[in-house]
Structure formats: C-alpha cells, structure tokens
Length: 474
Image (cartoon, rainbow, N blue to C red):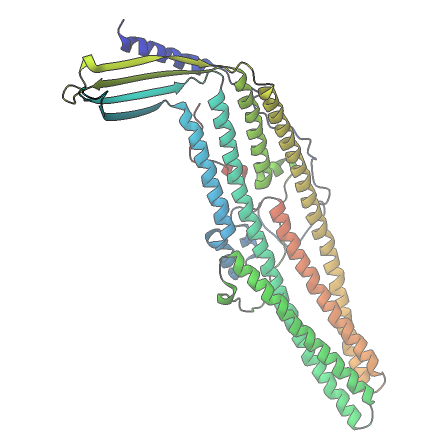
C-alpha cells in the first residue's frame, strides 16, 4: 500500500478521534451566589447633583473639573505601575499562545556532513545526511484543551487585574486632588481668619491705648493671631504632599510638577448603584477572582489527564549518502512513521495527589471569590452609609457655621461697645473658625466617599469589555 495513503488515513483517524474526544475533569460553571436584592444604605440617599445613568469610561468627568480631567487622563499614559501590569498581561497572553501552539504538529529539520575513517591504512569516506521529523500529539483526553482553557482564563484574569490597577490609581489621584483642593480652601479660610484677627487685634490695641481694655486682651489677641498664622503655614505641608503624590501617580518628578490654586466648587454627584447582582459584572477585581477560579477548575481536568496514556503520531524522512550529487535519490532515502503511546505505570501516588492539589486550589479560589464578593458588598454599604450620614452632618454643620458667624459678629460689636470681655470674642471667633473647618472636613469626607463608592462599583468598567485579541482554539 502506498505510504502516503497510510499516512493520510492515520492522520484523519487521529483527527476524528481528537475531535470526538471528551475533556477530563469538571466543566466550569460560575458559582450561583445568593446576593441580596438591594443595598440597605441606598434608600433615601439624595445628594445634590444627580447624573443620568451609571458612569462609563472616564468616570471622573462627572465631577466637572477641567484640571482633574486633564490629570487623570495622564494616568493610563505615564503611570509606571500600570506599565508593569500591562507587561504582565502581555506575558500571560504570550503564555496562552504557547499553549495553543500544542494543537499543531511540530516539524524540525537537520542536516550533517562528516568525514569518517577507520584504522590506519584504510581509506576515509564522506557521509552526508538530511532529514525532517514531525510529531503531533493527539489530544484524546483533553490535556491540550484544558491547558489552553487554564491559560486563557488566567490571561483574562490578568486583563482584569490591569483594569483594576488602573481604576485604583485613578481613584487615588482623584482623592489626592480633592484633598489638595480642600487644603487650598483651608488655607484661604485661615488666611481670611488671619485678616479678621488682625483687625480684632487693632481694635483691642486701640481700646488698650485709651484705657478701656487690659493688656491681657492685647496679648490674647496676638496669641490667637499667631496660632492661626501657624496653622495656615502648616497647611502647606499637606498640600505639597498631595501635589507630590499626584506627580508620582502621573509619572512625573515632583520637582517638575505644580498645581496652581484655584476656586473649588465641585459638588457631590449622585452615583446610581444599581442592584448587587450587577456587582460581579462591574468590579474588575471580582472578575479577576472569577477568572482565576475558572482557571483553577481547568487545572483539575489537566491533572486528571495524567492518568491516561500520551498518544502521538510521529514520522520522519531523510536521506544519507557519501556524495552530495545523488544525495536525494530514492536509493538513499530512509523514512519512518507510526503512533507512539506512553504510559507511566507507577508513580507512588503522584498523579492522585496532583489531582487533590488541583481540587484544593479550586476550593481556595472559590473561597477567595466569595470573600471578594462579600468584601465588595461591604465596601459599597460603607460608602453609601457614609454619604448618607455625611449629607445629614453637612446640613447640620452649615447651621452651626451660620450661627457661629452671627455670634461672632454680635459678640465683637458688644466688645466694641464695652459690654463684654475680650474672652467672649476669643471664644466666638474660635467657635466660628472651628465650625468652618469642620464643614470643610465634612466636604472632604463626602468627596472621598463619593470616589470610593464609584471605585467600589467598578468605575465605568463592564465585564463585557474583558476580551482577548484571539479566540480559544477548540
């Protein structure tokens, strides 16, 4: 029988067997988590500036701050941690393609030319040879397919890791930016208080000069003024730290970066949180945990294939002769073709324990996934509750600011009229300043909680975006 016919028959038979073969191990099914129907802290939360629909893509633009938009856009371009995550993703995709290459036969070629001789007195001779060999593993038990499945889901997890790293970095930048702007507002408040206290000191000195105020009033006014100046200077330390943190996040040297102060009027947006069942679709870190669980599941089947023999087809064709002129003639040809079966008979329980290890790794990934979901739910509940209570606190604190400003005005007028001691002025001014600083602190906490809520919801990302450039070969 013609050898080409034999080769084609065996090849097609191998293909038929491989395509009809089943894969060892359990097929992956996402866990059916019992998620709550809603968030307990969501009801009744009504911040000031609603937006239409959940944020998508550039989620930070909902704060409507041009400087913030420009800075955050630089994160994906210059942040070095993201460049490292992107390189890790490219590495995982290359490993996936390595696994996919096993679907195809391997072909190699070699050639040689040697001069051979025997004992003294016998003539030497030249020997030339050329050959090509091929080997192809028939994926009868699904070893290659499970390996590709494991590597593909691992690559998808790396893709989700990159998105999560980008979201975390963007969130850190936005929060540092808001802290910097709050520091500017605090500096403005303290500078305005310094101006007001300077005027109070001047009034007190004038009253002391005419004998209607004590020396102690002047000293107390000076102490209050200088303490406030000291606090205004201290704000600069925090501002520089926030500015430097932003520089590092966008991949710039702090010495070459500066953000100029400007009026800050960002409002707290209303972020639709949806329902908990959508959480798994919107959180890249949860998606990464789920993909790693799928990869661990595929590793179980991969371990189970070790119980079955490796079956491969191999063939070679070559020529060998003493001259190059007729090297490739039929008389000089040598060929071989046939299947190869290899099976380990005894391994001391190695394969069984490899399967047990794979199952344990899957159980671990399942627990990590469920814990990740619970943690995400807790983060969202925390930020919803924070925004709810901070909104109420902000309203109450604003009443305190209004009352303290009015009290400061009244007490200062009464002091000018000589009906109150200067200690009452000090108390009123300190109370007013503390109330205004508390209001700024609450605003800062609201902005931080808003950013953290968006991050806890996954930013503008959707799981449908988790795709790789190529499809898994089947």
